[in-house]
Length: 246
Image 1 (cartoon, one colour):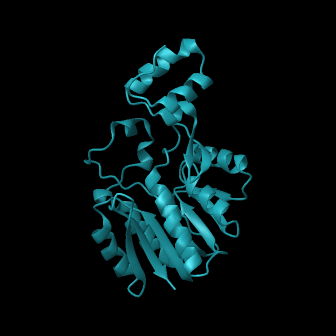
Image 2: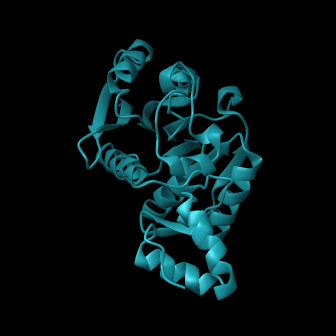
Image 3: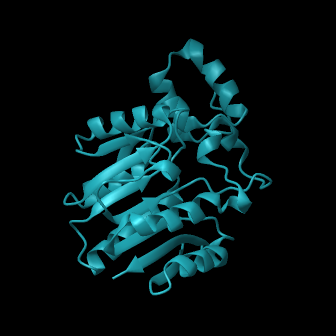
């Protein structure tokens, strides 16, 4: 059958390889209704590494690669290559995978409140032969025994009344939306982190493009002596928040 106009050539060829001809019409109908191609293919490239994805997890975005890139730069800048890391809301595990692959000396713990998401993360860690600890726990109720040097998170940050890409309707809502204009999880993580971080530490977040100023204020209230930086993505939009205590 002919390629639907709503899907690019490479993705269509991958689908054709994966599914027999008799299933392609059904697949094409799904795609025409904005069903994510990544779920149909079953994986996505993130920071150069193949990551398994399905409806249990959020599809990794290009913007999140920028979070990894900036974080690695700061870890190198402040000689923190042997840091203990907590990845909050790990989902598919893509952030943990990229960090561990690029900087093997990191000790990483990946946390998520969804057991279904953690099952995917564990598949990915096994696929890449990575020693990453996973914890099934709500981020707001987690109290670690040992402290961390880096807490990194791409938490839910979309406000409930915000208009977003129709394709996201197939992704887990708990990984997308948050109360208080999308700021709910940031505020709780930042405040809770005071008892979770070593004296020399970094907090790294992906954020919504309109949330930078509000989050800087929240960060300053909790960490008045820290370096608080909002970094931009490749489209020059505010996209990352870093709270650096060195």
